[in-house]
Length: 331
Image (cartoon, rainbow, N blue to C red; front, side, top):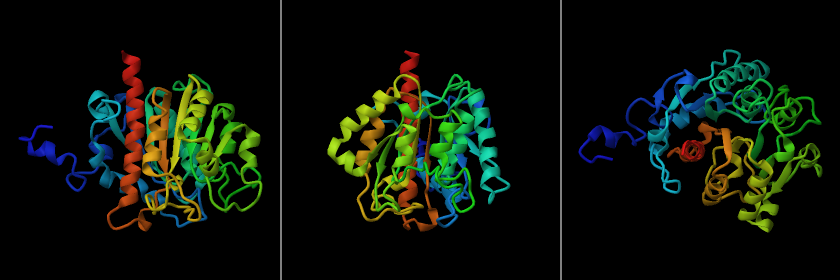
């Protein structure tokens, strides 16, 4: 940074200027960038909480200019090394109709896959992951060569509740996506890992649906017993060399770090931010074609917008992971 350029100094102040994701150029053409950052203002997939998760993309845009910086661990400035653009928001005129929104999001992300552009999405409730991957992966996807992704899923909940027909009216909901994407051929569960499940379960069989599908489920208790390095090593081994998608539900973090999330689990500690960083950075080198951050509840946030800032940081880590992979592939 040049200290004699006042505008350059202002670029990393979140309260200055017109907000875009990471102060990136706003360009809705996915073919014009290497990495797209997409807002998905969706709340209709999780009726069990207040429906204001659609405010998440705007909240992250408001604060994430602070994250336009080099990545110290990777020795890379992703926003200077690659064309990273704010693709805008998916238009969701049927905002209260989850199924219509899922279809619109899938159409939007298939256009991004057709451009062979890697994607980081900011939600929105966790139903967006299902919608994104319906477009980004599976049959017809140039980005994944017609195949499924290996999923690496950070969350307090498994979201694979195929035993119930809908979640308070939403069929392809925040509670269902990890199951129906397997059936749709968008996720290979044998290569996928779910990490961080915790809290008091509603039933004794709360993990069974994921395990029956073929996911490796790592509860917080498992995580502490096995250790961070071993968990990430197993996730990497399962994912292999194929396309990978990372979904990060902010409720996997400890509530002291991310208090404004849609489904708080207060009875058991979640990940620290250092643990989250170490796990994400432990995925370095995998062929990550997409990622998302979900379940930010801006109206529940602290006055300093702490949870929105955490969401922006996680998205920065995801952009940096993708940029590091692209940089390695180019050498």
